Length: 474
Image (tube, rainbow, N blue to C red):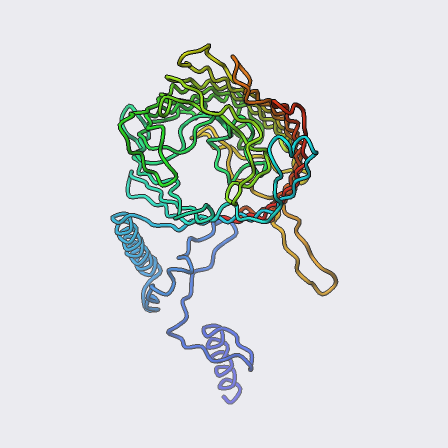
């Protein structure tokens, strides 16, 4: 009988141990009510779907007295309540416009080395360090409405008004509609934001011919597979740096651009593509005159005095003028080529009609294997995303480093402002660049430019220009 009692006692202890689980002597006690047991899953069963960690705090622990079916139903009920709450929160957020702060800071160091003839033609150019851009802005949206407000504090005088516009998406027959102060739709280089440029400055023809920001209304869209885009704007042509355009002259412009992607590698997300495009603008001459000029491709325009214009037509009496532009770009993995040509016939008053022209071609190559991303919605290039961001971390054995993205670039530009008796000069410029993308938002640029100027009455001259930029934006 004593042996029977000992046997029964051992069986009861084993049963209690199986029900309560195993625990070492050092484990803290666990309240039975806080433990949720799930049924065992055989290898043939798929993994159970469990509530995410972020929702765990909102779930009540099912009563252990409930059956398995009841516990599953309780968890599903709590998940449904959490989903409804999240949807209501998202709906409430959509009922108010969003506001996102943007900023951009570019600090430049510049050095000019001119020969005597160049100094005689354009004057002595001062070296220095300047803020090229110091911008603050806000962007946001509400349903299908979007807006952007941006100001630059690097320019002289009061803060300059840059992009200040409101737009609407999915407008029937028009696609996107924009009203305000914005870049006119002309030129691949001009239409691509400066934050994503390969060189410190845009090309000579972009400076001389491509229109910048003006007041107007613009519509644009893309086709279903985003292989083509179009944009058309009705513009007031003489907006000042504060976005104002007052006067009875009525100078207006019609500006448009179309692009086409005959080749775009979808699986590689645009690592291989061919871009073609064209632009046109008809423009009333401001105050019955037209003027075209350009600084070198490394320059300062925010200092006093700014870098002088190397070529300049001076004021030409004119009724109107037109802009014709052709553009092409090829991305083949880390290699990229980009080309543009522009011609500008001027309807002159009291003389022969001049036609000015220019072109550029550049190549870039990522030593670290990245490529230039492309925005199919707008037919422009986008922000470079390094495979590996720059960092230095000390480990137990050594220093671990990420190198960011490194890009080599070279460009040749040509601008001819001599035509029909107008002697604005000819300028050829060779630019080499090295870009270090520390991360998607921080970049260091080093540029060297050799400018070859031919302008009367001095004739041929040259200048060597060195520039370095540290840039950050978000």
